[in-house]
Image (cartoon, rainbow, N blue to C red; front, side):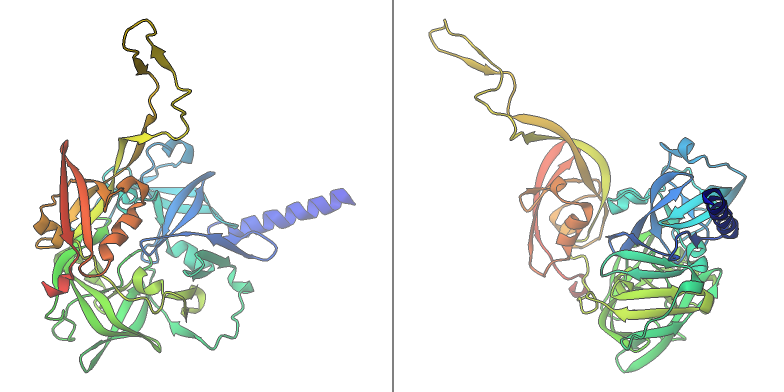
Length: 448
């Protein structure tokens, strides 16, 4: 009897595995699973296992096939078989990125498994989002996960819930709203509107969980989509093909469904950097992490709908970087620290008892050298507070307001630059081996 039950269980497992080949399927009795993620700079970073190796992936509704990069030390373990060379194009000013397509890879996200997943592997060391976020990121995953499962993103509690579509049941939720999705090149678009003075302009926006900004709009005189008179030029972010620059401003109002957000951050990327994105002629821009995180979302690609519910972040004000500094993780540096574990009275020392003046030479001092993260200036906005104070690109931040920079994560350091107007910032930096001190006050860039 036991052998018979065991045999039936094997058949059930094999049938489910066979069914899941080429698609994601949640392999447990409840057919649903919850996965914790890290929210870093409004981006969802979650664990993804590829061919038995667990990596950190960015969840990006704006990407079709998974992309793997930053894998030089583990490429052999991943057992990625290169089948053909391809070229990928993303946002940014650079050229196409060389990649290799790989087939028949095993992907696991929690209990969701795909035994036959295609991916693109990039071996370009210059493409490194980890240094920009100060958090390890080895790849991007999007459409292939969303198309097979109902995906709930709970930004408030930082978990992802994956459910097989046949098992998902919508709960009665009076505070939730269902919106229709449209798809172009496997990317989800949603209708919204922007308010400028007394005008209400309808827009079609890409839902981009892979962007940390609030809202990007493509300027169009004919549609009335253009920046306010109060704006500033700025670095907007990194795409697959390089950096993106443009104008930043404020919107009087942004509306999605029945939800209204006031005084919203908005960016208008220069057309030079978004040529590829504008090939979808009816697209007016993107809605990204700084707005999306204000909702808990349920994506149901099979029925082409997304459900929104306000969460604890909804009423948070929108802030801009008031320093003008953008930092990245610039490797490690040796830092001399006091070692509290060492007792000076018990430490090794040499005594000269016969000398007229007793001398003690401490051979084991109460300090140690440790490797700590280094944060360097990668972008510096012209005429910003930091720019006028004398900061330069490649300066390494040693201390911020008297505290060692390495005591904070990159995100925590950057958050200090979003504080109130007039906040004093004191920086000690290493500029090519020369230690310099700078003081400046945060100031709103929209008042410049």
